[in-house]
Length: 404
Ligand SMILES: *Cc1c(COP(=O)(O)O)cnc(C)c1O
Image 1 (cartoon, rainbow, N blue to C red):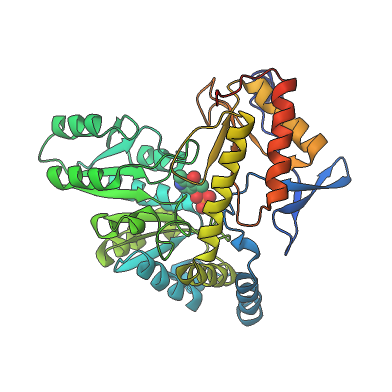
Image 2: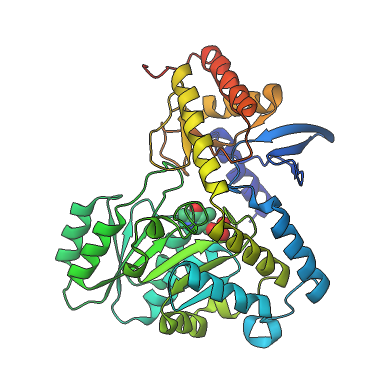
């Protein structure tokens, strides 16, 4: 086989479908979030980032940076091993205690990413609990889907956020089979929020465990940044809460919070936890500082919501169609892959605004969009510039406007 030719032809088909991913080569500026330098053909150019998942700018918070520097000075660069073989650093232990407290659980367990935490936890539960059936929301993140696949257990996909469909599927399953319902709180592409309480009620009725991915909510919702379940007083109703340290907490890593026995079980059986080098101590120290800050500071959360509201008002005034939702994610709807990419390119090249286009398969075809994530650090002038640019491009591109 001509391997090179194979790779190239597969890539060609991505290009043809407009699905080939191009990375913006960025250098973020400490102390000047959300500004970054973009390198294009060797020539640097300043841009404003509008699609970061560092939702609160915590990746540049002085407490976080200081904690990471101190930890590097104390402990050096890497963890030096897996958690089991010399890699457990005191910062890991403190971080797990902090996360357990954040979610009101007995224990927490950290992983090298949110992706791995979903994959390893769901995979291990599905493999190890005899006859487990996992009921998975249709829009669950790729990492949950991959974990469930890897488990090779029975899985049932229920319609996104649809309680009737979930109940029908729970009722149709073998009443003796152990069950787990896996879902998210804030869904990343539409920004909608699941009915957590009602899903927990169904879980109780059918004796199922619950697994909630709060990746897009931790740090940002709830009085201590514990997520939507904290805000709604539901944390104790969830068997497992999963989160990331890489989005609102601004660093990197993932975790689950659950009972002591469940965390110990995953710690003891999950390949994706056991056979990999532990997070560098400095990352754990940075995450710890970020979580501690957001547990007590309301400023970032309040300002974040204020920026989101203001952006929506400006978009409405300009008739730019955006998907209404109760979260901080503002999907500006284009509905055409080529136009979406074109708008994003012009925004970057002519207006110094960076918003990555979101195309199929991340979202369904015809719902291509710009997923805009305002942060507490975007100024009124930034917002005006963003919406003014969109306004111009909407006219040039002959895109339909929302009816005011
Ligand atoms: C980003 C994301 C993850 C993965 O988290 P990482 O820490 O980035 O690996 C998991 N679930 C959802 C819903 C996500 O959007």
